[in-house]
Image 1 (cartoon, rainbow, N blue to C red):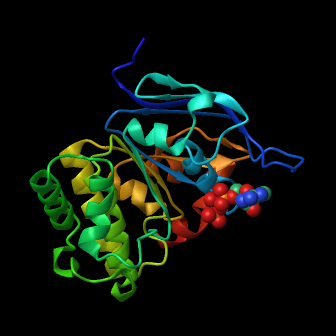
Image 2: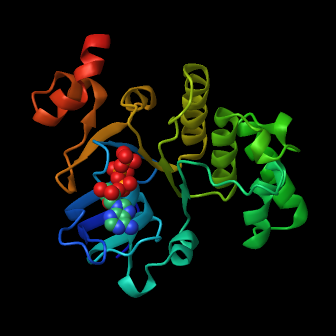
Length: 252
Ligand SMILES: Nc1ncnc2c1ncn2[C@@H]1O[C@H](COP(=O)(O)OP(=O)(O)OP(=O)(O)O)[C@@H](O)[C@H]1O
């Protein structure tokens, strides 16, 4: 039966790369409510990007069950297309913009490709996305002319224009200077507040969870830790908190 309150549920997920002799992810569980934001952090190489790729249907787990908005997705249907049909969009760390299309056409192209409305409806959706992410002034530019901060915002605008029910972001602030980082976070917050998009953010920037008021958990030892708010983590004695917050404790 469909659980109305649930965006995503993962049960006992296991993943191993073909030919490897150990799992990257094992017994991993996750529950995300609709409209909820969850930040996932952890040391490099633990499998955070891989987890997003699995949720987006780009990699197929060896075992485990995934439920999108209460509906079980059988392993035979675990493809990017089937997951996208359920309203899930992944924003890659590098943005993955198409180099020979302008910003406007980068945002419009998936909408035309998936027949998301009439020409007028699509153009209006593109305009909203350009405004929401403050990139309308660069709509006629090609990606190679964009700064990394603007390119990130265009990638988010493109994903948001698809009206996702669940948005996955891989390191949205990686490589950004403070100015662009500090500009981006309120835009994400605003988008989430206005459209109640469910969000999973993979990030090394732990402060994002504080700024978005979101739960934070860590990918450690092949699975996800308990999730707490930033303020709870920073006071906690859990070993991973000590390690991950070491630098921030001195800074705060
Ligand atoms: N094709 C592959 N075959 C085997 N191992 C791989 C392959 N691709 C990635 N890996 C390994 O899988 C693990 C998980 O990688 P992943 O990029 O998901 O980690 P991450 O936690 O996102 O790291 P970072 O924080 O540095 O981005 C890493 O140890 C990586 O080396």
